[in-house]
Length: 323
Ligand SMILES: NC(=O)c1ccc[n+]([C@@H]2O[C@H](COP(=O)([O-])OP(=O)(O)OC[C@H]3O[C@@H](n4cnc5c(N)ncnc54)[C@H](OP(=O)(O)O)[C@@H]3O)[C@@H](O)[C@H]2O)c1
Image 1 (cartoon, rainbow, N blue to C red):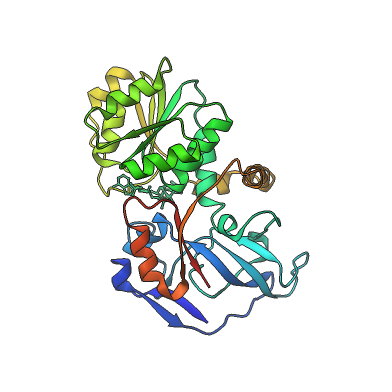
Image 2: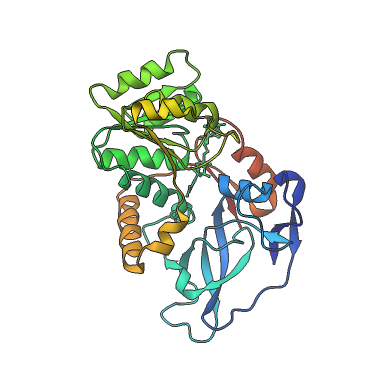
């Protein structure tokens, strides 16, 4: 079977290669899946570049979520049928033809959920959901990288929850696409008066939170539009730049800057509650109240072209790898 792997961290196109490896056999409590579709996420790219948690060993595999078909089961696995479709999440190594995972870590895919959604239904939808849940005060939310999967989901969930979301994007094509998706407020950050436009979009509502996966100057700019007591929530570092916050800027208006990471939620949340939230999200996908567009599907062996596409500004949806 084929697996995309790397022997050192660095530029993905330079360090990744397709290796032929032995097909693994499931041990007790494990299953083997034939993976059919997986996303190319910014966290995969950051991991390969060495900007995330470092790989435990080399050669290292990548990809954290996917959808696949059960091929074989180890001893003690019950309630799972060979041939059924399952979602894999938080299991590194999905950029491969096949994978062994604990049977308890996978979830059955409801018939109405497409492979395109099933393969990316964990990290980004949960992030959008939990960040919104974390904003308890009334008021508007502003967000950067609004054309990303997380950004689109924040906007769609915001609508469902009657929350005003002001979307910031880098270009007109993405702005038009967000309006087509149903967004009400979109501001293009290259326009000179974009910060004023954000205030106008907020109308009478205070802007009480800013969701930002970009950081750098963009994150800093967002502090200026927050109402007193507002929060800048940094959940990614797409610009690769730090946010140079002035202490007085925070102190004078009682602003706070904090991070969000999905990982601890799994550790600190009961299995029942995790299942309840996932079920709620899946139902919204089934009703098409949530959607994540796909901008391209590449064969697994064309991973370099897929990565290049995923890093192209103005892409209108997720890039997926099929096998
Ligand atoms: N903290 C967590 O637990 C957690 C969980 C999930 C995801 N995330 C983070 O969430 C972010 C979005 O992930 P995703 O999978 O939704 O992304 P995605 O769908 O792959 O889209 C990436 C988006 O980022 C925008 N972008 C890239 N570089 C940018 C820059 N320098 N300035 C402004 N915009 C930039 C692109 O905008 P254009 O359309 O203009 O090209 C694109 O819309 C990533 O940083 C990811 O690591 C964090």
